[in-house]
Every structure is written in structure tokens, then in C-alpha cells.
Length: 199
Image (cartoon, rainbow, N blue to C red; front, side):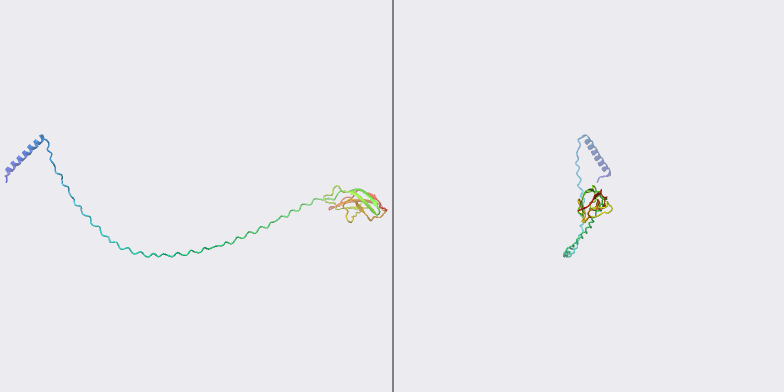
């Protein structure tokens, strides 16, 4: 063992050597000191705890599938629509034509007495029709033997010239006139002719 004094001397020498070495190193080439790499630190990772084991419960057995029988389709209902009644035709109203107003008629004008030829109890009279019939056909001609105071019709009626007057008394002078008749009535008498029947 060293004494305390010898230790101090030894330390001093060591420091002197170190100082000398450092001084040498300052002038000498640098010395590369290999520093050992640190050893990797291995950290132990704790092992994961095992997952709990889940015991699956048995699935229940499926219920039996009951297949329902299809319901029968309903029979189609045939609805027979009753035909709509045909509308009755509206009655055709035929308007009766309004009667045409009857034309105004008047008595015929005077016939033109031409001649009167006497014979046995007979007078044959010739004449011309009136110029106007008054708007109505001539129905007959009348004669007068007394200058128009009375009138006579022939049987059958005379409707045109000549007019034959029979059944007269011979040698009886007559003043003969004639006139036309239509639906409005008789017209005026013609001019007179004096005549006498004779055998």
C-alpha cells in the first residue's frame, strides 16, 4: 500500500504525464479514438394477453317452412251490360202551310152581245166573253127578255157562245140582254137587242 504522500506523488506524476501527452497531442496529429457503439437496448415487449375464447351458442334450428297452397283465382264475373234503350224519335211536326189568302175577286165585266136570231119559239144569241172575268172563271151566262128587269138561267147552264133560248111565244117582241156570272156573282147586263120569235 502506498502512503498518503506517495499517492499524491503518483497522482502528480500521472497528471504530468497526461499534460505532457495533451501537449504532445496539440502539436502532433490528432489521434482518432474509436468509441465503441453502444449496444442496442432490447426492451422486452410484453406478450399480448390471449383474447378470450367466445364459445358460439348453437344456432336454433330453423322452423320448418310451411308453403301455403295458392288460393284458387276467383272466377271472372261477366257483367252483361243491358243495352241502353234507344231514344224514341221525336215526332216530326209537319207544319201545315198557312192557307194562301184567297185573291179578291169581283164580278165579271159586261159581255159583248153580237146578234140575236129569232126562229120558231127560239132565239139564238151570239156574243163575246167579257174582257175581265173578275179573277174567277165564268160559271154561266144569264139572259133577260124584259130589258134586265128579271133574269133567267138555262138548263144546263150556258158557258159559251152561242146561247139558245127556247120555249118562247111567237110574235112576242122581247128586249134581250145577257150577263156573265162567276163566283162573286152576276155582272152587269149587256146592251139590248130587240127580237121577236116567229114561225
